[in-house]
Image 1: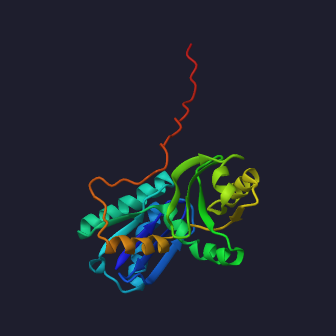
Image 2 (image 1 turned 90 degrees about the vertical axis):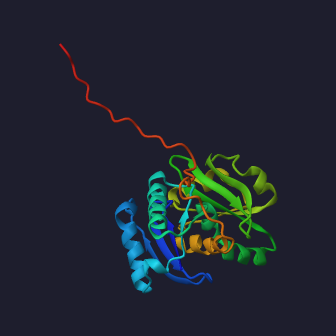
Image 3 (image 1 turned 90 degrees about the horizontal axis):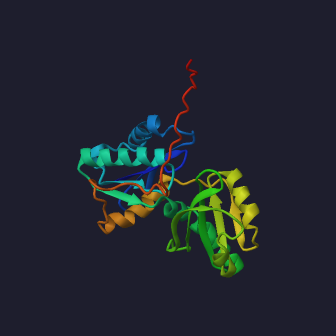
Length: 240
C-alpha cells in the first residue's frame, strides 16, 4: 500500500493505493488552512476505511511543490515523520505534474474532437497576479519547467503561437484575471479544478516500481519562490 498526501494549496487530501495502482480510498478536506490540525485525522480516516494498518504501508508519497509554503511544510513534515517512524521510503511527486495528470483524459478527449494536441498548464495562485505554473503535454512530459510567473499579455506567447493550451487553476477569480490578460483564441480555461492526492498516488506508483525514492535526511519541498513575511508593525510611542 502507498499512502499519498497533497497539501500544496489551501485544501489537503490523502489517498491510499495498492502497489498495482488501484485507488482504495480518497479523503479530501475543502477547508482553508486546516492542514495542520486535520491532516493526521485524514490519514487515520483513510486507513480505518480500508482496514489498513501502518505496518501495511510500503511507502509514503507527498506532493513536493511548488505551492503554499505552510501547506507544503506541513505535508512534507508529516510524510517524513511517517517514513522515519515506519522505516519506509519517501516518494516526492511534483505537485503541478500530478495536477496536470488529473486533466489528461479531458485533454485527450479534446485532441480527438479538434484533431489538435492540447498542452496542459496549471495556474496555482501565488498572490497578486503571480502564479506557480508549468506546461505539460498529454503524456505529462515537461514543456515548460515549474516556475513562479507574473501573468501579462505576453505570457505563454511562444507556446500559444503553435499550440492550444488548457489552463486550469485553484482560484476562479485569479483564473478569470489570467484569461483576461492572456486573451488568445488558443487558450482554453477550466475553473474549479483542484490538485488531489489521487494523482500523487498514481504517479508515485511509477516511482515506487523504479525504486525512485527521496533522501529522507535532505529532502525539502520546492516552494516555488522565496518565502517572505511582513514584519509586524509596532505601536509608535511618543517620548517627552
